[in-house]
Image (tube, rainbow, N blue to C red):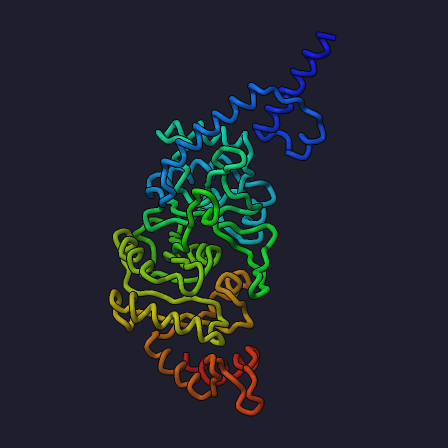
Length: 384
């Protein structure tokens, strides 16, 4: 009887440790009638209290760029691409080997084993687990009494500044989320822990991509587009630096500092605004482009060197689609100042409602995009 009691205690201890270290779930643990040792619970609570006291002394302000760069570099190295994610980037997105290796990884699961590996690697560069507080994506899990990170299934994308340093991580989700307000499917999200205990938001930084050629061989223009994959395809096909904004309003106070940094490496004489072809039926995007040129780009480049790049949307919606469809030579450019004159005249011919939406003069209903695009192709596109 004494031997059986000892074995039961050992088995219970194994289950307790397995739950504490994340090897089994809470539901699996609950299925077994584990008898807790009172001393174990006391010790566990004391350890948690000490850890909480130590963590609470750390403010959840954004960590330094040096810390963020080191953490994200280790984080991504510990989770290489799965075969399926690699094949997607290689075959569907058409990215080259160097680009894939330097920028993409498969998002890991927040397991005890992974966190242990991360902690060991952090020590090698002079950091500790506590340094994760302030790095977007990481937070303190009070229930488990340990630092954790946001879980998301998908491909991790390293967002870099003009020096090539990783400053954020974006995720291409395997399964899109649905926006509760608009009902739209969201394919991308940020590695952010803004709403978590001692977590930190990521913001919406711009991303800089360089082609895999010497700086002196790069074209003297910088493209501004929306989305990392578009940016990568521009690098490959046009031998140009590309800035990717994550949302049409995410340029403010971000574009110009990066362009100045890029100019330290690459001679830049002009800029190409390269949004999706259907921008022509989205006045909000156009207005943001105008503000960007007026407030940031126009003060750095001669206005005649700021170009709008567009094409027939039937050949491909985005620049990446256009390239993949074999239509890269179909792109057209026009000085932005001339484009503004033509496009403003085009927009001014329509009636607007109180929300400044274009409406059909006969039906007084908001004009559908297809009809507006037909008008655009007849009245604007031929002049580009």
